Image (tube, rainbow, N blue to C red; front, side, top):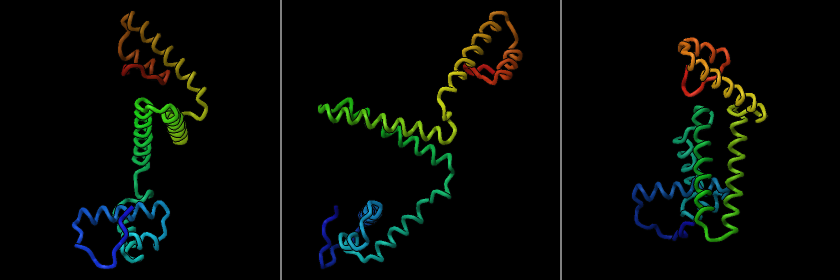
Length: 172
């Protein structure tokens, strides 16, 4: 929380201080604070605060202007980061309730990540269908092993894998 604004102007801010202040204003607005409260906290007018947010938005690409795959990658990175932080908390905390909470929240983050992957088609909606994929990969692996034992050509092995639509260990 910023220090309350005084009635008389203080020394001029350097660029870093102004950037930090502007970031705090944007964060306050994103937390739902009113323009009146933000303006009072930073000794600015509501219009100045609104302009700071407008400048922030202009310098940060909107969702519709970004590559959806990049957005998905960012979301997955955030899930991974949260899961790693929660794993660290659960491993290092001295308080049982904190450890349990971190583990529970980590599992929730994993479930949310799986839900996202299902929504974009990376994982099937019914994870049970993966059983058939696992079986097909195992069968293809066994077939390739047999073909390798009998010296069958790489082209023939690739043709078999293509027919089965399965790749194993980079073969093919």
